[in-house]
Image (cartoon, rainbow, N blue to C red; front, side, top):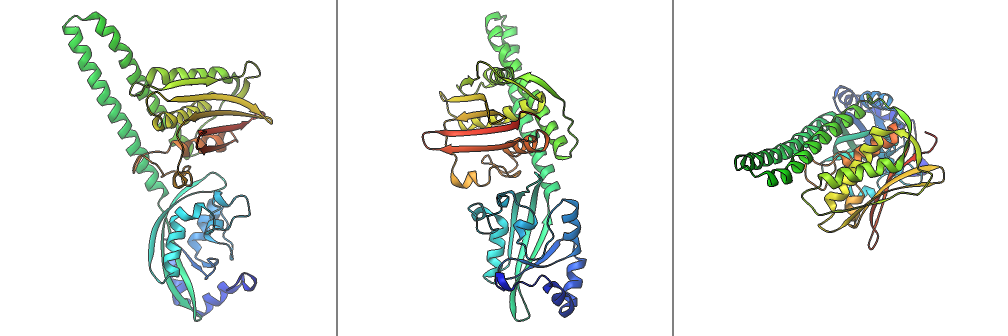
Length: 368
């Protein structure tokens, strides 16, 4: 079928001519769709219609799967699902291409919609012939809740286990110094204990805030505050708690006009996540810059590190289940976008290039 001959009523022909196929599709637990050879929806079952209505998606005949799920990478309106630079790494695209080659496909797809919702989808595809034409049977299972629960648990327990192990080592050292009555060494070690406890408390608060945010249960409290104080507070936190690397922390704060209206806990969490990622990407002796500026009526917080992000990583960086640190890790960049867009009505973006490093920005309206 070509773009000019698409018939939005074609699903009725399928329902009339293949009642057994439709009956099976309607009894399945997955969302079931049929795509034509141009990847457009010519049929979808009731389960997808319900899911679309619940999540403000587009259950429209003639649209491609990415458009139906309102993929954020298509939000400019010019991009076509399956043909953007992001689609090269998309599981849904890979599964469809296998079906178009006559093979069965199964791929996982992490997708962020225009409204800020994130979905982890398991896509199953196969080729099917109807009316002597080739179609793609496209089945979708929403595994978001399962993946979210697993990811949060793995991250939380991984980080807490590391921190508790560090606490154990520090307390062992303190006990040894106490037994030896080595007061000077005790004084040198106590800041490490304070740092470990502070980091553990920070991880607990971070995971709790993300859990509330994903369930739309996070309350916001807007008030006027000094952006410079927020930046200095975050920089001080990392100077005190970054003990495994020798990172230089630099702050860039305007001399005036730094008052902004925002939620202190949320914006601080966003900047902490940006800085944490920058620290993890940096090496000993490198500089991480934390700054603030005002531009075109927006308050912009940013964090810079000298490393450059590869093309493959940058295409997936805001997806909930994506991480360069292994399965069950990450969520930092995803939570930045979730908190900024859903709760502060702003946007998160980044730039990365040779000689310029990587800069993450959290831009929020000055009149929030």
